Length: 192
Image 1 (cartoon, rainbow, N blue to C red):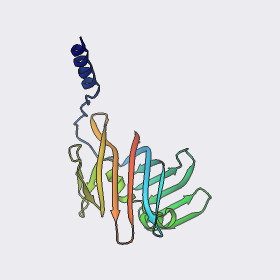
Image 2 (cartoon, rainbow, N blue to C red; image 1 turned 120 degrees about the horizontal axis):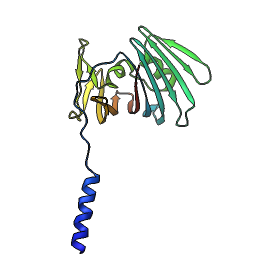
Image 3 (spheres, rainbow, N blue to C red; image 1 turned 90 degrees about the vertical axis):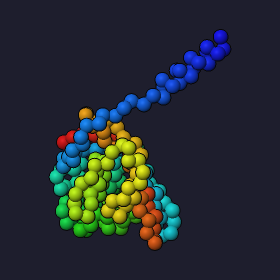
Image 4 (cartoon, rainbow, N blue to C red; image 1 turned 60 degrees about the vertical axis):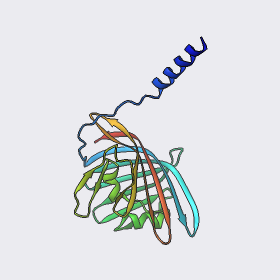
């Protein structure tokens, strides 16, 4: 009787841990989309390790990107607007800054650079080479990739209609003076 119960328990546990295969349709780059999710950032500022956790809303319309960074409780920390050759950030207190580079602007304002130029592709599971050609990343490519000076790892995927899209992306960059790692978890996809 004990052996039978043991075998039943093993079969039940095995059934619970079964993974559902993700759709394998062709992914198409979307120039218009909305995403929301969570982010975690670890960085060094003035030689001191720092971190930040929160939520994000990403809206992309062709070349325009709008990002809202929120606290874990949903209060706005910063609103970022990016257009070709122009980046703008408005902090919670109302202070507005502008620059030509979003990475430079976010590093000066937030203490860490946000690679939005690469993220427009990475969030959808693509990388871009130096010639501007897109490469599709697939769920079986779980190792580290390099894109635009950043090290990427697609840690999890999710179903979206007839294809798969990223669920969690970890990316990092190390320089002589700083280390930075960012983890993004995409909770919701809304095509524009």
